[in-house]
Image 1 (cartoon, rainbow, N blue to C red):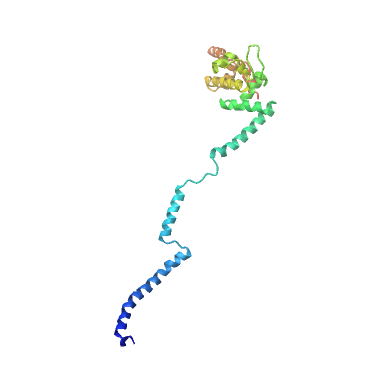
Image 2: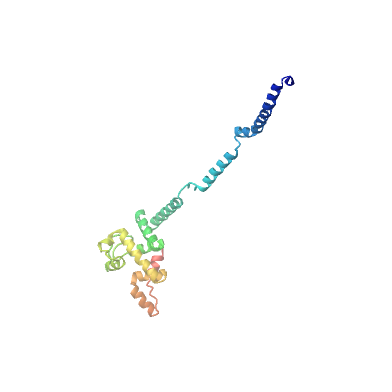
Length: 217
């Protein structure tokens, strides 16, 4: 029939080719369209996902907890248990045991030595004064206190924290002076470093039994 109408045939030929190409384009585009419908990423989506992944990898992960906080809690629990043990062992209150323990730790004194010193010096009495004028828990002389911490008064030494701080700070000085020799440092604490040095210079032994009492535990 198209051959009977040349004009219609020619028009058909002109329309058929573009229509065929259009239909083929739709057929070829269908798989890609199906991928998008099914949720499979195309190039644009893969690029977006890559960028998101890079950002996520670059961003620091939120910490579950601060490391210091995680470590501090067990330390506090351990210290509390140690303090309670010392309090029971020496028959003193937990607050006093805590002060002795804290002052010892502050100046690098073995807590066992610190508790032994306070027991030997004052029997854990805050207001005791010796015949030589030494005061309080660590039996600190006012003259020694002024040398260790200028400005410290005699009345200051009746304060628990001040007395322990000055006493253990002085013991720390003696430990350093005698290269960590605990017995020599304790003997000097009791007899005075001048006396100990003179005995040592003569080749003698300055030990008077004081260090043994402190370290007895």
